[in-house]
Image 1: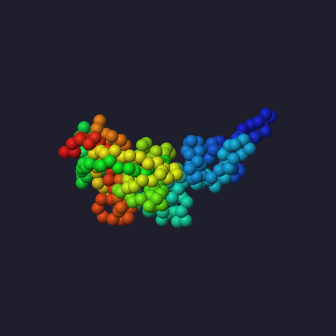
Image 2 (image 1 turned 90 degrees about the horizontal axis):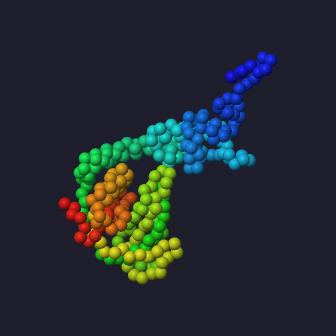
Image 3 (image 1 turned 135 degrees about the vertical axis):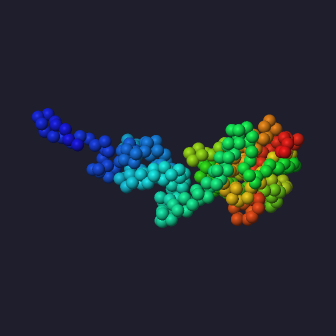
Length: 293
């Protein structure tokens, strides 16, 4: 683009694309303009390691020109509603097409669960709050017990790895103390996780015996209570929208009888491909809690 300078001499106007076409380095704003995304998105992708940047003398992020096409690809995959962790899984793979096909097939498999969760949302809006077909709420009594607790936090994409790490940490401490595990571990989720915000978690393992609190953990009493509980097989436990629907249904059903955060109880077959119930979602309620009929 040219314009007439004084005395008719043509001069070059600055390009709205900054230095992209003439140099290899881009500012945050220039990269955002090239990829047609917001500067906030560029900063988020850089913070999550999806884009690589250096800092100039004034502290501004500077991106290599190769990051421009990578940003375009990220924007394309995000337009398909892939999570940030799924985007990273695809673009950092040696065979990105094959990995994309795997990710996309997983999303297709989850579609049925999304439909079931959608039907649950419709039931809530109609005033009935009915669980998806095949699921039912049971009730049981839990006796007073002692638990070893360890706290953690995780984004949505990190939940599986963090839960496994907390469980291993607690089991290792109990094994080192030579005390037996008395019941399956359970997780209390105090705040909801998203792709960008972390959930506060507490992993508890009931045990028999007396031990001092291991470093970074604490021992607590899980007082006697009733539980309203829903049992899930592995496919149902892996179906995040369905899991959210079950949590919501139990919270609504417990009402004022609720005695604490919802729990996810991981049975021995969880994650092993075992048939039958591998996970339970429960809400503690008063011993004479609400009817589940």
